[in-house]
Amino acid sequence: AQSVAQPEDQVNVAEGNPLTVKCTYSVSGNPYLFWYVQYPNRGLQFLLKYITGDNLVKGSYGFEAEFNKSQTSFHLKKPSALVSDSALYFCAVSAATGGSYIPTFGRGTSLIVHP
Amino acid sequence: IAGITQAPTSQILAAGRRMTLRCTQDMRHNAMYWYRQDLGLGLRLIHYSNTAGTTGKGEVPDGYSVSRANTDDFPLTLASAVPSQTSVYFCASSVSGLTSTDTQYFGPGTRLTVL
Image (tube, rainbow over all chains, first blue to last red):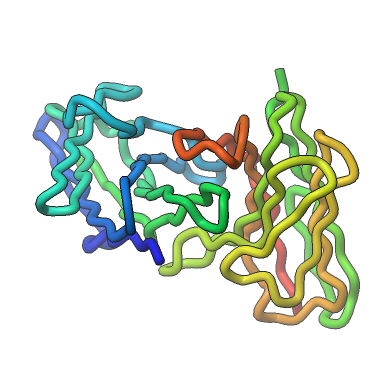
């Protein structure tokens, strides 16, 4: 079985400071990892994904994530946070399940960027 | 381009009533999914469909049914609603559920309250 853990329910950061939202995973076989963002009263939007290759993945809105196989982590990062980055962030892992690839989502981390 | 539409936006329902949540996509994606989002639990997969005419059970399928008569529509039915089905429901789609690298596209959600 595959699983995703987002150990922080909430992350607080000041505008202009770097931010990190943590994610660890557990899968059998190769992990395919995703980050999604959810703004209030909206559906989830894709940010970035890791499939293979370079461990540092760049995505939308200046976000990036680093895949670390030895630590089974895929932390989301941004060098300089904006107030508009405040949202709910979900990490997801995808792996083969009965012939299909169905993603498993973490519980989400609320990012609050203070002016 | 509408993407994914869901209806209704919100609904208050008496326990025991039957309810169908509608989901339509115009991207000609093969795979579609239904999730429920509950505070502290993140997104949990209810049912999915890899292609028209096929469906599969997710993590929390009990009390829900789906059908996939064509590519565009993927309705979710609660045969006899119970208060524990109070949640926000998201429909999503991807090009192909058989591909591990698929990005999911989400609808705006339906907020359902069962009294």
